[in-house]
Image 1 (cartoon, one colour):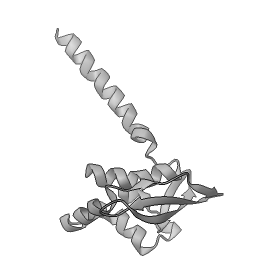
Image 2 (cartoon, one colour):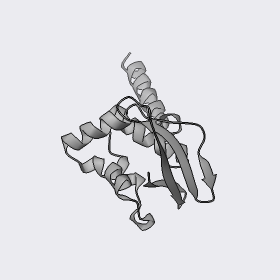
Image 3 (tube, one colour):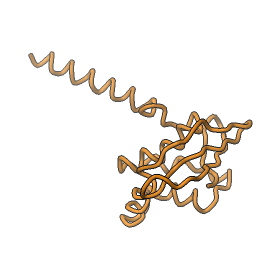
Image 4 (cartoon, one colour):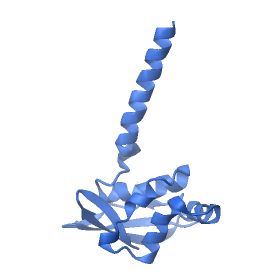
Length: 132
């Protein structure tokens, strides 16, 4: 009976790890949409650890983008504000990609109705937030 339990546990871990690696529905930096969804997923889940990876100093992100990327190390007030403004956010439509640059239309805000555009740049196969 123990072996059956351990086998089930290992399988659960394996499938959870695979789901996490794919970004839980495409939320990863391999696409502009996935990179944007990383922001909303972080705000919804409270797991801010991946936000610092969304900025690349070599791409000279603007102040707003840096604030998003700094939430990982921010205080509770910053995290609460971030959660309030981005937890109801979503990508609207498909990103417009031109070479290594993309524009991703989003909604965000406390009620999820404010419209904005994330500007992203691709570097070394990953998409980074550079302005909004």
